[in-house]
Length: 342
Image (cartoon, rainbow, N blue to C red):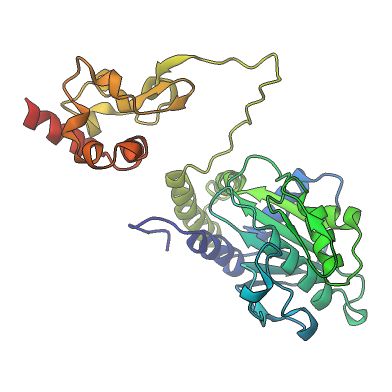
């Protein structure tokens, strides 16, 4: 658990976080997670005050009603390419007292509006029934954005109904329009109240807060909780999932730094002597910020000990050198290239 040498996928994040939620005591992960969402949406009644039991399901499958099967497709896909869909599989479902949270987790800025629509409709069909009583069903999106998503990013028109969705429609508006395409009534204000969002950055911070609580306790349960959450926190740290403030260009108090050395300013590499013993950070243009973003500027190599032509990728794929430089050039490779050139 928590060790992924080839990188962390969204399923790894989902399985680790909600797996801990499933097996650790409710007060360790589940209740802090509900409190986190409640803080994001203080006007909603999200966290039940009292509940006897909770159930955490990972990748459960729900059968789609027959009348929806041919319609559960993105509306921008031509009808002749659509396939009948028999099941829908959310990433996680939390059943807490009279509350149900259907979770769609993404490891990106992705907003899969069609999946959110399908999960919302299945939630209403499966959990809002006379036998379920006054159950509250929420659809929860987790991704790496820094604010609640504002647009569905899909443009299409349904041929049979003439109902159109546009890229600028909000996710609740998209859900409402898609429901009308199915012939189902749906109130957009109610959908908006039932659609929730939280970032993996906030979940990383949540793990940090829980560790702070249990790390000072010496009982066996607290030590187990702290140990598991520490492993998860290390993974989120490696992924860079820590809360950051969103830049607001219209805020007069914002300060823009035009050009500065990335390493001293952010502390991403606090110990140069450990990772680059033979290279001066100032000689590595890869680690400089140019025009407010991390860029690889070939002109910056002039006068340095390293030439971009020493990198095979610069010759073979010149249009991809920026991405390769940021993702593929490791410190040990830079050192080897420098030694060979010297």
